[in-house]
Structures are given as structure tokens and as C-alpha cells.
Length: 115
Picture 1: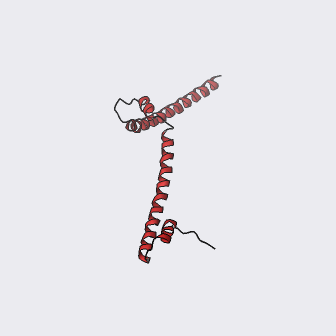
Picture 2: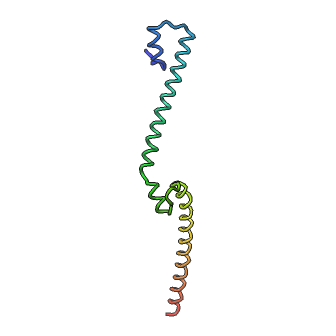
Picture 3: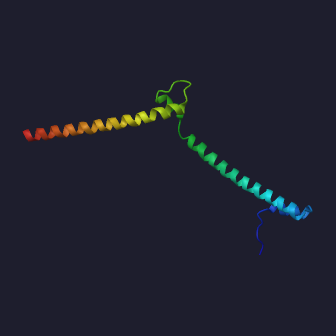
């Protein structure tokens, strides 16, 4: 049974070039490092591709403009500054709506009690 080497280039080179044991060990270590770097590079390329795909899904310039960003102002700074304000405003409006609904329900009960 043949096992596949983790240093096939060095093994192939060894057939043609005479290497002592320490040189062969060093060459194998370098090839392993190169293989690991190539694998990491492939992972990073895949991550970059995925990250770029996500970035293409939205238009930060348009969003920053909608949020009142000025020409020359960082889009991300505008978004980071304005979105929390919008979320707080939503909470305020929800609370006001809940209060209004409570008042309406109270008025309806008063009207029913009068009829």
C-alpha cells in the first residue's frame, strides 16, 4: 500500500538531485510551510470573495445620503451616527403609540359605560 507524501515536490526533486538527510529534512520543512501558506492563501481568497459579495448587496453611499450625510463625510461614520438615533426614535414612537392606544381603549370603555 502506497501512502501519499505531504511533500511530493521535494520527493520528486530527490529522485534527480542528490541531497543529504539534513538538506532533505530542510527541503521538506520548507515545502510543508509553503503548502500551509498556499492553503491559508486559498482560504483568504475565498473569504475576500465572500466579503466582497456581501458589500455589493448594499449601497452605503445611498444610505448615508438618506441619513443626511454631507458631501465628503465618511459614509460609515454617518451610518454609525444616525442609525442609533433612528432606533431610539422608533422606540419613542412605539411608546407613544402604546400610550395612545391605551387612551383610546380608556375612551372606548367610558363610551360603553355611558351607553
